[in-house]
Structure formats: structure tokens, C-alpha cells
Length: 129
Image 1 (tube, rainbow, N blue to C red):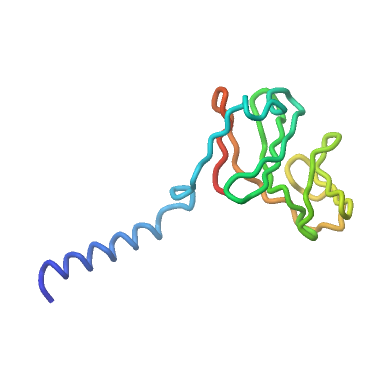
Image 2: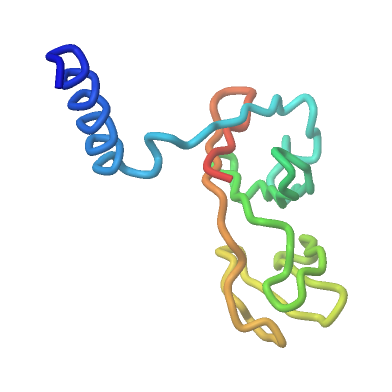
């Protein structure tokens, strides 16, 4: 094997090995959403469902400093969920989830998938869909 070929193969193998060692978040794509585009989230207690990267997200303004994100699909039979009276509810079969995504009562048995969300001034940063 020529030195150049050996070097290319070795570099490729090293790159793959390093990529396997990096944490998942190192490859996560992040999305920025201006608060002006989602006025419901400007106030505490506001909520909105948006679609990003072919995923429906439920975003809830928990406090002045915090917005939480969830996959907006019930874990029971994939119906949409909504924020109602300080909890997350599936209207299809009436599963209820708390504001951390955990099941309060079923028929759902699995928690909602949480989505990392952060406030950055007048923007909401959504990552790792």
C-alpha cells in the first residue's frame, strides 16, 4: 500500500473513531424561533404548537426564564396533545401529562418526549429534535 493511501485510510478510520466518542449533542441541530413569531410565549402560562423539521412541538412558557418543549404527539396512539389548565392533555383518549411530560393518568403509559429548549433574549432556541 502506498504511503498516501495508507495515510488517507488511517485518517478516515481515526475520524470515525473520534466521531463515535463524541456525545450526541455535538451533532445536534438547533433552531431559533423569534418570540415575535409566537406571541403566546411572551407571557407565563402561554403555549403554542409549532412544526420544526417535520416534528410537531408543544412549547410552554413555564416562568419568565423558562420555556419547556415536548413532542406534541401522545405516546398512547400518536394523537396530538395540547396544553390545558396547567397540564398537557390528549383529547383522543384523555391521557394527562404533567409539565415535565410524565403521565398523570392514562391510557398512555410512557412520558412525552422532552425537547431541549432555551430562552436567549427575544429568541427561543430549540435543539435535538
